[in-house]
Length: 431
View 1 (cartoon, rainbow, N blue to C red):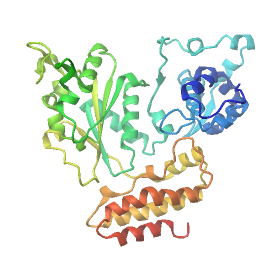
View 2 (cartoon, helix red, strand yellow; view 1 turned 180 degrees about the vertical axis):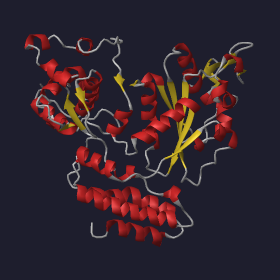
View 3 (cartoon, helix red, strand yellow; view 1 turned 45 degrees about the vertical axis):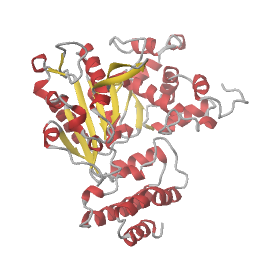
View 4 (cartoon, rainbow, N blue to C red; view 1 turned 135 degrees about the vertical axis):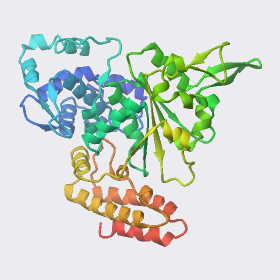
């Protein structure tokens, strides 16, 4: 499929055009599952890649997460097959063809060849209409779990229920507990599909202002200024235009800025019982006389908050009253070990060692009167990126301690570096 002289440093856009699209992978993926057994998804992707002669292009990635492009598209194919009812996910990291999928594959070859696009394919297996111009990946709690979430299904359900009721929610916890990672996936699960057009992520910081986030004056040349809507007001308008669809604003590190000043009059309108035209208020900067706005009922806000950063401001009571708060904790247990084993191939005995060492470290941090539980080290530090094989797990863990956990501990015990050094040594002793 690839010419031998293609170099890996060619533009990503050119290389992406050479890879099979996700809809072209669905029938080949189904055929690999035709034995009816449970298969590790990563093994299926690897075999599919091998059959197509694409193994050497694993280093090509789709985005900053480092996920291989082929695996990303195969993952989309898997999600669509599940939506069509042709495969099931029997347990975390595994995929299996369904009875419906076997029946589908038993069609004559001439019939299967008709399904050249996802639109044709989906129409043959579902009566649900869809927008042919922009296929959207369905997304649910099952997808959050299979993506690598280690908290229980029951807790995720409760978080989503609080979000539906309260409209505004903040995930708070120690560093490395996956707050931003989970926030975006909760947004997709709330919407019911992985639709980036309905999710807007914003980072709060000390220099962010009301004028940046809501609306403010901007120069347009010739010494003139014009009023420009910020991301929050843009999402309000998008949600108003699509009242039957949920929209979500994700605010990363919400306490790194000054939330009361950044939200302005919107702080009042955030309340769930004020999401009506009757509660509309005038903005500080109006596009026209008498302009009044309200936050639509279908717009939700998910914030994240690092409670270990001493430099960050506490959230004031006015903001706190308008949000539900969910605590995330370091989660090292069977779900974590199962996922890392299935996705990265790290031996379960080594994972048990890492779990024991990190748990012991977190116990020390929690008992330290100058720190406390909010300074524990999260599981993200010892969770490799999705689909990246770890060939030497002991060396990988040593590097994580030296370059990530160690510097964090130096910051924690900046006035007692001998404690940091002792903690590092205990993490790596005999490893």
